[in-house]
Length: 521
Image (cartoon, rainbow, N blue to C red; front, side, top):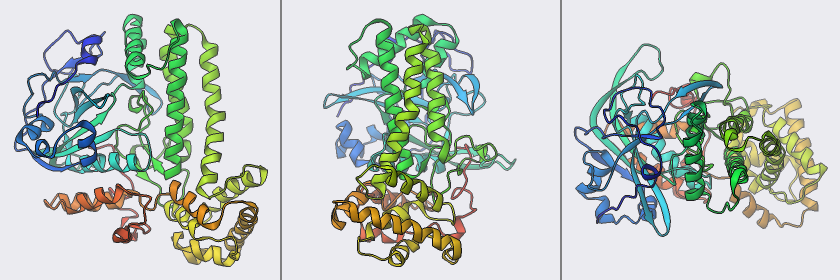
């Protein structure tokens, strides 16, 4: 089959005037044309059947040499014009200036079933935005991104997708923990798929350069192609655009909190204008419930991007986007109204989501207190976030508080701690919970269905991905395949995968890659 790439982004936005590929500042340009680095001996390790079908790619094409060359960057097909995107951003709260795609190269956009998809290779070589890096990616981080993209989609979380995982056949030098111990690792490339890879930082770039002409061009392009429902004109168009981006971002964060996902690097250059999760680096899922947890070693001291702070950071990032868009609006009040509404609406959405997690349909002061008490209780002793909420499906209205406590006891990492005051606190909560359940019209069976629909049984815990990485490093990709199949149906019981419905093992508590991760990739 032949792929017809579209060139919407490059045809409508300004290109870098310099064609040579060397690290530099690139003013007044949204992108630079680049050529992917030719890999030594590319090999297809894994591909997503669902993403393949989404793009209209046949099985025969996926197994072909043409596909391998395409997604490894080994060969540029005739109508592809690969490019790296230019953007700026705030990193850990500080202005970082120009950033751009340091190792991501867009192949182009394709259309299938009236949808536009952008294909991007991550780890395909250096670009003008690589700074001091080599533009490559390693197998370790690429497996994590490939699996997590698909896991998040099937959890119902807005996300980029991953089409393929390629081993390049080259070795890459990396210092995993940034502690002066670099080592060679296997190189890899992931083919990411999204409507586009436009970020908050794309707008920050032009705004910071006072390049209002290109700022307007980018905003108009984004609205026309991805927010076509916006019919307003003039500044009202940009206000409506910002409002929709804020809503999409808020909904995404609520989903993150629902499944216990921690992104780890919520810089403005890692925020998608579509409100989808992008750039899977040192991410993680909560093991024990801990609002202060972050998987990112770089953030270990400040914990800016901790689980409990993700909504605040999303709002902070939206403030930066509002500042970037301000020259097109020149009126602060409508932007401030949208930003002020974000926190109010998020709190309401979060409360409603938490009620669903515990299978409650009524909203009142009693149920609000129930949520607050629960969040307090979960911190009293290390309690597995995923298992606790999933096991609530076992509780019946006729249970005693002792029976309730027994049914969720599997979620406790240190069950012997659940004595005395902690035990009484939990019994008090279950007493209140049972009282609410008895007033609810939902049957036990219907409540179980509700709980199971919002609380996954399986998430891609870091230790699971790390096990797959260690096997893959020995050229055994069986666990990559197993985990991929597992995450396709995270809300189903899947008895064949029951071994993965378990708390993090003790060996993974402090293991690199299983607890904390660096940005090294």
